[in-house]
Image (cartoon, rainbow, N blue to C red; front, side, top):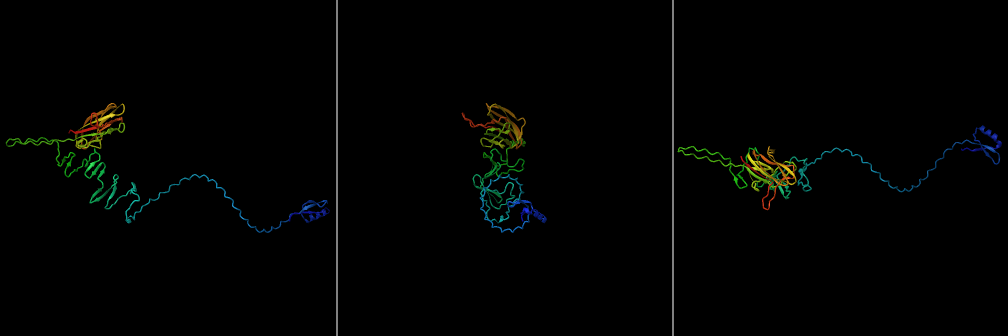
Length: 400
C-alpha cells in the first residue's frame, strides 16, 4: 500500500506521539492545518508491500496489414571489377582416332561433300602405302580441263590423255626425246659408263644423212709399204691411203643484251643460239650447255675465238675485265682489261688455245664496277640495210 499522511490534533499531540512511537509505527513528520486551527505535525507512513500483479488481459486482435509502399528507384550499377588472372592451360587431351574399321562395309562410292577442296593426307600426316586394284587414276589438266588417266596393262604404265612426259628439262613425247631448252644437250648414259648405245637401225642427222654402219672416219693412216718385187721384178701394189681425219667445231652467238646484276659481280657470257642447223649455227662435237658452258665431246686442242660488243650508258670511264674459265676454275693469265667511256663502243675480240679432255667445258667470264656497262645486241640496221648485231659471237675449232 502507498504511504499516507497521518494527521494528529494538536490537543493530543504529545499523547499520540508517544503512543505511536511506543507501537513502533514509523511515521514521517509533516505539518498540516485543520480548518483555521493551529497546524499539527504529520508523519508519513512507511510504504506498504506491492500487491500481486494482476492477470494479463486477453491479446487484442491483430490490425489489418498496411498497404505496401512504392518500390524505390534502382541504384546505378557499380563499376566492373578488374578481370582475374587467366588460369593455367589444361593438359592436352589424347589425340583422337578415326576408326575406319567399318570401311569395308561401305557398298557405294566415297565422295567428298565439296568438289576440289579436301586433301587426302598432310605433309606431316602421310599415308604409308596406297594399294589400288585394276583401274585408273584420273588427273585433270590444269590448262585444257581434260582428264588424263594413269593405269597399268600387261606390265606397261599407260598415260592416256597426255601427249608427253617431262622430267626436269627433258621431255618424252610420242615421237621421241627432246629438251625444252634449245641450248641443252640430251645425254644418254654418263661419262665412264661401260654400256653402249644400241640403235636398232642407225642414226639420222638434221641434214637428212644417216649413219647405219659402225665405220667412222678416223685420222689419216700411214701410206702402205711398197709391195714386194715379184719374180718378174714388178713393183707390188701401193697400200691404201688412210681416211681424212675429221675435227670438232662450232659457231654460236647470243641475241640479247647482257648486263651485270650488280657492280663487280662475276658473270658468264651467254649464248642463246646454239642449236645445230638453226639460225646459222653449225656444230659438230661441240655444244653449249646451260646457256654458257662450251662443252667438248672429244679430247684435243681447240682454238676458241670470240667477239663481244661492249658499251656504257652513263658518263665517265670504267674498266671491264674478261677472262677464261675451264671446268669452273679460272684459267691463269687469261684475263684482259678494257677501258670504256660513254662516247664510243668497244669490241673485245681475241682467242684462246686450250687443251681439253672429253666432257670438259669452258666459259667466257666478265666483270665491271659499273652496272651501266653492258654487252650490247642491236636489231637490223637501215640506210643502208644491214643485219642484226649479236652481243656475243663464239667460234670453236679443233686443231689437234
